[in-house]
Image (tube, rainbow, N blue to C red; front, top):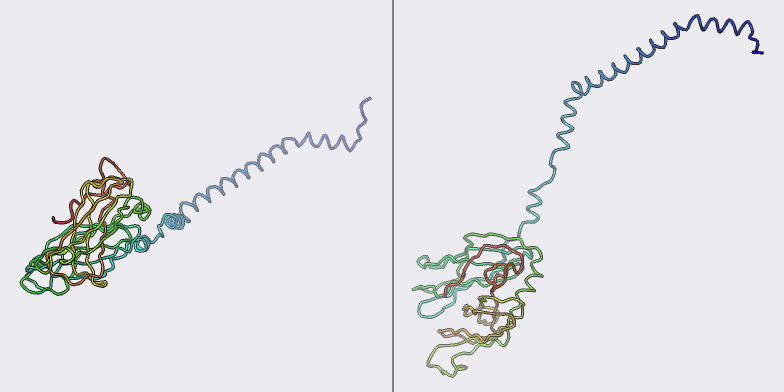
Length: 300
């Protein structure tokens, strides 16, 4: 038999049946109210974002996109340092001629300097030429203007940098030690008596050996030859050795045709721009650099 319902249960069930539609209407009303609330809140948020908070939003986005890197400071920190002037001299070459010399050092280990320079002599009537040259990273160099004519004695000259271009080279010192292995040995100064000329002629000579211990073949290698009295140059000259292939050794000499005081030493410094690809024989891109050819820097 089905369970017997009490009068109370029957009354409750009758009441629920009677008010079923009312319950449905209340549920629909609650859903409508919730829906209106959500739409109202959403509309308020959109109005707030696009009207009230727009200026703040734009300011915030502008701040996000702003560049706070001080590139001027970065460039200043990374910029190459100026040359160090180690001295300048006007050396009497005889016959009313002077050799103007300056010694500069490049203190930057990652920067190759490509320059144009000229000397200013103490006599304003003296005409000097503009030369193109270079200084390797972290190196020093003698700059010369040889055989400048002057009717009067010249005092210390001044070297002027006409133009300067820096070329940054990563790993420069390692590459320089690899390619610029031109070793100089047995450099000696021979005065007129050492040459067996007595006092009849004012001729002297510097002799030395140079060997290419690198793996590269070069068309030409320059040498700055400086005769010293103490630490001061008393005579300078420059020569080019042609066809300097890997492993070869050359016996070289350069002469001076003026009277020189006693020499206390000789400095012979190889001069080669290893980042100029045109200096290499039958080898393209020896060091991976692409630097404009500056040509033949010295007058012959």
